[in-house]
Length: 183
Image 1 (cartoon, rainbow, N blue to C red):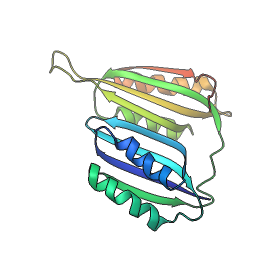
Image 2: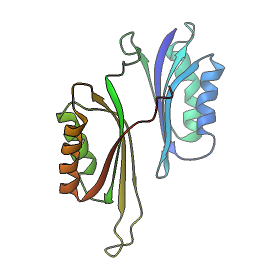
Image 3: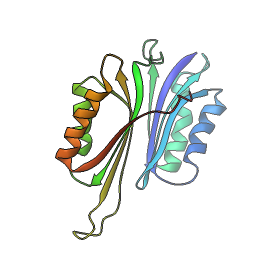
Image 4: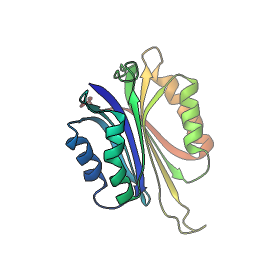
């Protein structure tokens, strides 16, 4: 078995997920992990799959070409090495961070930079900006993070660091334990 990662990006429209997964199904591949979402008017897919030994890169590219043309997708395919294909071990306690406030430059950077400096690993990020109505009703920004906090790091010190950043950015911020892991 060979493991791969494929990304596909194009204007959102019905059939993209079905098309990508049909290529994989037709070759006998197994979808293992994925993230697929619409970002404004674009749709993006990132997925890891395994393929039978008989399926090589040329076969995958040949099958993806018509789909890329049909949907005007940018498709990138990368084989994963043995070290890249190992599932990462959970390195700490899983927490969720939500940040909410008026949209301003630097929210994602400031929060992620603070977390990186104290050794907190970000495992998932979602952001959303609401449409604002000018000065009277500015855009609101929502940042949701899933993180792994090392066991050696006190949750109170993470909270203190995040509270400082929230105050500087004039945003609401919450840190809470993640529900029981599903997967």
